Length: 219
Ligand SMILES: C[S@@+](CC[C@H](N)C(=O)[O-])C[C@H]1O[C@@H](n2cnc3c(N)ncnc32)[C@H](O)[C@@H]1O
Image (cartoon, rainbow, N blue to C red; front, side, top):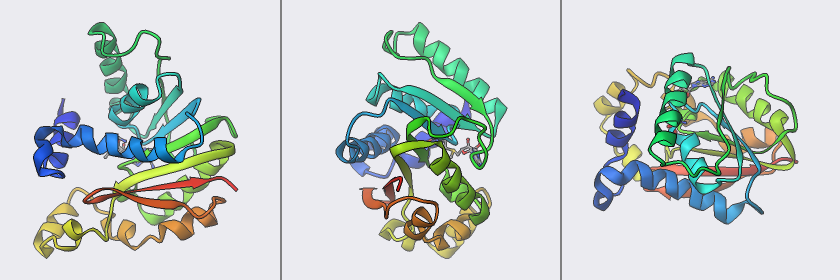
């Protein structure tokens, strides 16, 4: 019940004119980057840290032909994700032709999914929650999951954005009460870590006033 509302509230003011549609627009801006940069529509996608499925559902709209797998540490979130899919099916929000999403309980660091089986691994709004050891392990796992020519895409907060640079220190401290690894994330050299995990140097696109998207191709 809470997660969708929380996401909508947090993202409502990214673009002042978008109002409550900020979350939808954020996801759309991410997918616009992917559609511009991927050579073709991916057939198989893994969404690591899918939560209650909002990021996975967005892929269902953008790439309705794709086979989608959502992975999360929380079995509870995955149960909610499955319930949301049933509801969306019942109300006709999902195209009848869309392939059902496979929900997979596991850690992004070691998903247990087959190697070299996916065209795109997406990690959306997860990296800011990770200690650096987990972030590095997830990059290596994404590399393992991808087929030759596959891509890894990561969308999250942009620590260099003005909105985040100008956060008053007490707000940043409050933020850390729910996001304890923000310092780890802000200090991570993402481009270098992509390369260390076996990817080409990624592109970096600012897809919102305070978010950025990395897209890297496997070497
Ligand atoms: C902020 S939510 C983002 C959810 C979703 N991707 C979205 O865009 O709405 C972060 C999610 O990452 C999951 N998560 C955090 N660490 C993880 C890990 N190591 N492996 C898998 N999932 C993880 C959490 O359980 C949570 O559901």
